[in-house]
Image (cartoon, rainbow over all chains, first blue to last red; front, side, top):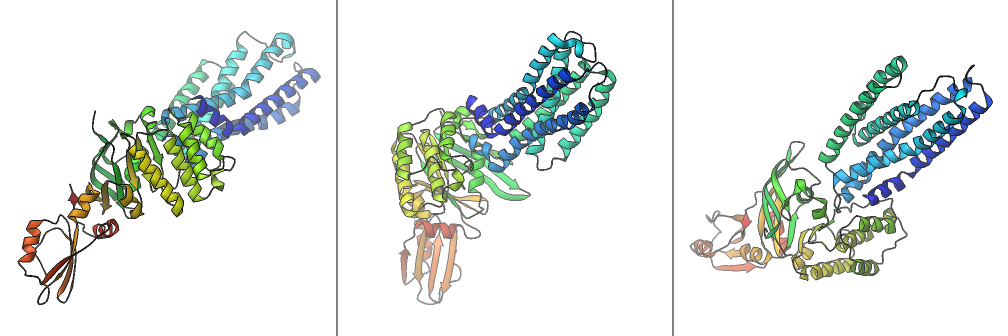
Length: 213
Length: 300
């Protein structure tokens, strides 16, 4: 299993480098904004102007990683070779998903650590009141959202027609965004995300297990 | 434990409504080198892919090493060496990296034998797989398949792209391998001379069916090509069954018959031919006759 994960990481190292770079940029941005501006009065406009495209790039990047993993497997017949060795298809897919999770964690863990440190020492600078567990709630939700994007990428990469997963992604966004805006982060969002991820993974697993390699 | 390493039961496979395999039954006993022959698109690779669980069958069941192909465990896969047609190797990897990956993912790895093969084939570890010639890729695939000390080896046109020397090396290796007790080889090739040299049982696929399935010697024994000269013009019909091919030219008739026996010889003699001589047939001749339309079935 370790050899499979190592292979996936090495083949898709560019996504790990990208995740680490984005994480570093976000951290530098957050620290410099906190240092230079008083967020309690008005957050600087450029943080929103830069933040939205950055988040979009991250979402597409995560989706692209899943998609690339499956697409390259299909075109280079990697699983066709691996499954003739002492490896089951289940393990190949599991290793791939673990690699995806590792890439998401490469992006999120430094951000979460930075957020915790900032909240501990400079929480008075934040524009909204902090409550215990807010970082955990937001982190879990963001992780699940990123993982849901990754799952959509996995499906889109394995299907020759990526229309269905794209529609799924659109539906999920339409449900989640209003919910987050109206009700904020909470259990309801987590339940929807977990259900979506489970359904998406089951579909990916089924197609991967039954398709000719 | 079953004595057959490979068992195929009533295998049917359709691709887009086209029947490729129609009720194939096949058994390969332990220690046998089975040569599976057929023209392009006759379904040889499909049988192999179904056996390895890479392709689902439409109907029927296949078993490898006592386990159903659709449920082959990783452990069982580790006992099977496979050289695929076109060599399914990861093209953008360097040879060294591919070797390390295969080694890490194998249950057992015979370093000594593998290094011997790499030296024999002179494979460069620092070049990318896609930069290798077709022949070198074939050799690499072969070395990887053999390094795991497999109980069962499946070769799908393994000598495709190999030069004469490399092909000879490969055949000698295969013979060496079969001499190790209990090894079984399923071998597909279009080079019938190679198959004739190493196979001890032959299967021929034609018109989606397995028309021949018997030991090589028995096949040569049972398929006869005869040149028969009659005193007057040759009769249009000899009333013999299992005639694969029949050509008449004046007094001369050339017939190829399956399952030739004394009874058929007696029927032929009732037509009082002036002479009847047997034309020796190689495996290639038998193959060409058997793959003509409406082939007769030859099973042991």
